Picture 1 (cartoon, rainbow, N blue to C red):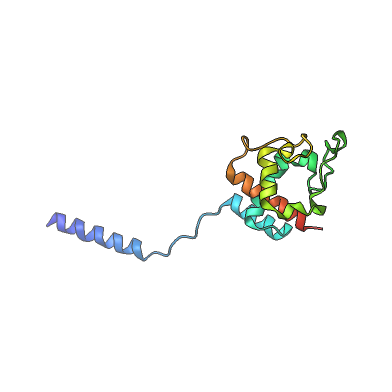
Picture 2 (picture 1 turned 90 degrees about the vertical axis):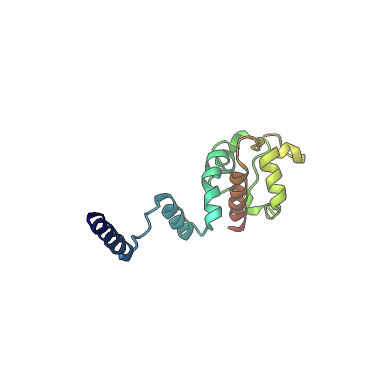
Length: 138
C-alpha cells in the first residue's frame, strides 16, 4: 500500500510539472548582439559573422570600411583595393580565391597573403559575404 501511495504522489508531481508554462528561452548575449548589429549596420546575420574576421585579418590594410585606407595601407605598393568601388567583389569565386590562395595566385600583388590555412571554410564563407556587403555600400 505504501508503494502505491508513492506512485500516486509521483504521478501527481509529474502531472503538475507537465502543466507548468514553459520557461522562456535563455538569453544568448552573442546572438542578441549580432542581431542588434544587423539592425544597426544593415547586415544579414551571416554577413555580420564575417565582420570580426575582417576586422582581425583584413582591416589593417583594407580599412574598417574596406576602402583600402587601413593603417598599413600607406606602406604598401600597390595600395590595397577599395572594396566599395570594386566590381570583382560580386564574383564570390574570385573573392574566395583571393582569400584562400592570396592575391598573387591571381596575378596581383603578392602583399595580400593566403589565409586558406588560417581560416576555416566557414570563416571564409562569412568573410566573402561581409566583403560583398562592403562592396554594396557606397
